[in-house]
Image (cartoon, rainbow, N blue to C red):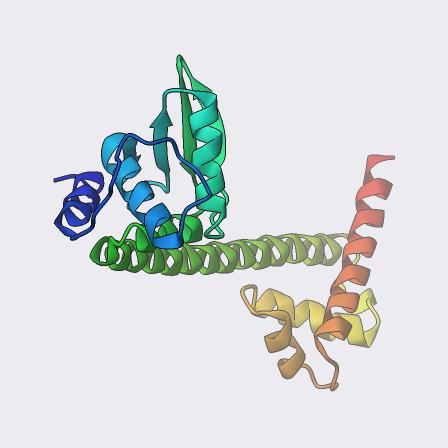
Length: 221
């Protein structure tokens, strides 16, 4: 059974009375009557997507006036739907997950709402974890790329002029980078004889990079 069918089955099991199921939608009625109207409307022309795939709830109306009236009823409960046209029909729809959850609660489909919320929480957790993994992967890739570039620069300096020609502070860092190509800035900082932070290490690595670039340009002349 689809999630949409589950929602409708739960709504059908609720005990409610709707005096005139074919009356026009109007806001001049009490809240319970408006809730029952939405329940009947959803049973008649509503559907909801599988939340595992994407978030989408819609009600298909025959006329634009009916769609706008339905929107007003939903808005009276703080739910803000949108309208679009599909062939000869007007579609009142929700794509915001929180709004859909509120709508399910309004329809008295509480078990479906809990299922929807559990799926939504799990999806958000998976997406959050994936974002963290992507961020960490990007940082690792960035660190590795920077380390490779720095090592190439230092090796060029070593071949062209020798590391002994460098100032002592740059020479120590250059040698350390060659010995520990995968070390982070913090690890390099902790391994140096002089007490400098990551920014200091990064500054010296940039100086080595500039020296290497000048040697490359000189070699092209």
